[in-house]
Amino acid sequence: MLSLLLSLSLLASASCTLMPRDSTGYANPATNGGKMLTNAPGTYPAGLGEPLNAIIVGTSDSEVLSLTDSGGLNNYFLSVGFGGECLGVHLGDAQTAALGDGKGTVNQTAEMRWDYYNPGFGTCTETQNGGNHFRYWVQNGTNANTGAIFMAVSEELPLSSGHDIIPNGYNLGRDWFVGNATSRNITTSDYSTSGGTQFSGSTSSNGWTYQTTVTYTTGLLNATSDGINHYATVGVNGQPAIDGLVAVMEVKVTQQGSGSSNSNQSSSAPSTPRIRGATWALAASLLIFFLL
Ligand SMILES: *[C@@H]1O[C@H](CO)[C@@H](O)[C@H](O)[C@H]1NC(C)=O
Ligand SMILES: *[C@@H]1O[C@H](CO)[C@@H](O)[C@H](O)[C@H]1NC(C)=O
Ligand SMILES: *[C@@H]1O[C@H](CO)[C@@H](O)[C@H](O)[C@H]1NC(C)=O
Ligand SMILES: *[C@@H]1O[C@H](CO)[C@@H](O)[C@H](O)[C@H]1NC(C)=O
Ligand SMILES: *[C@@H]1O[C@H](CO)[C@@H](O)[C@H](O)[C@H]1NC(C)=O
Ligand SMILES: *[C@@H]1O[C@H](CO)[C@@H](O)[C@H](O)[C@H]1NC(C)=O
Image (cartoon, rainbow, N blue to C red; front, side):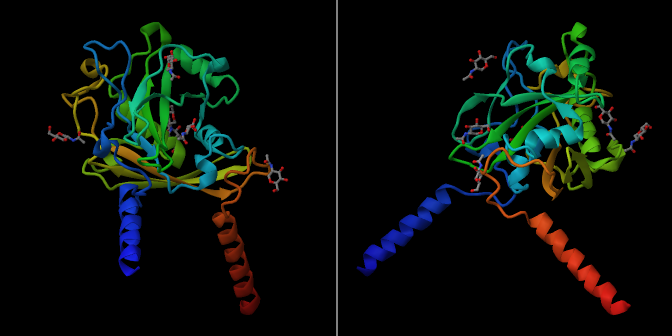
């Protein structure tokens, strides 16, 4: 009987170690057969890709990670200034990526474009004139079900130039996304190339407010031009095409909009920011009461 219990508990702990839930909120794709580069179709030479240079981690609030709820991922992207494709029309082939989560190599979930401060038709301007854009994938396969969103961000040239990437366009696209998410102009002098620099700030859309905390992280990508799409034209001043830094972002909801959720999937999760806000308000009014 005892040995049966023992072997059962051994089995249980073994199955736990088989499916780690990373406390960082994401799993490095490379540790499980994936990679931190996308696969872009029709590159020359073949097999080049774009860096997955930003991650929204799975420890972000569940509302943010939801792809269907009204205050979810699309609304968060809107708050940073990005919308879906112009009139829903997608130009060009989808890219694929393997996040090492057991799903193998899959198509991008969606492509989002800078809206030029015009949430209505701004993404059409981006399609025409170029600008910041990104594709993203969800790390939700059974081998690494972290829920993290992996993004390939880059600043592209106008349609007339075939949507190539501008010089330094991967690093700049990432920094401009982070800049819009944290309301500050970020230049290379603001962060260390050895990683660890943090930025934090808030954005709002449709009554929802989000706090984004970004940590520039090394070790996921190398500072390199190897395997990078458009490597020959993207590197500037003798630097490689990418600096190897990944913007690891944790996004929390600090204020919920009035719009109700479309699904109940995430509404079961307690809204900690709201509770925290209420507790602080109570503490503050008690303090004021006693001071008077
Ligand atoms: C992936 O995208 C391509 C278009 O680029 C499409 O032809 C293909 O059907 C998609 N695959 C899946 C599994 O959706
Ligand atoms: C992973 O997320 C995508 C995008 O939300 C969804 O279409 C897909 O069904 C999810 N897969 C799993 C295994 O949950
Ligand atoms: C916001 O994004 C736009 C377009 O990419 C960029 O020009 C601008 O500098 C960004 N703003 C900040 C504060 O980073
Ligand atoms: C970023 O710089 C531009 C140009 O100098 C300026 O117009 C803008 O207000 C700045 N944005 C922030 C958030 O500091
Ligand atoms: C970076 O390059 C080194 C040397 O080529 C390699 O061993 C390592 O796996 C690379 N790391 C990443 C994250 O690609
Ligand atoms: C969400 O849950 C509430 C209460 O359980 C229920 O009345 C409502 O119909 C649900 N909405 C959806 C979209 O499932």
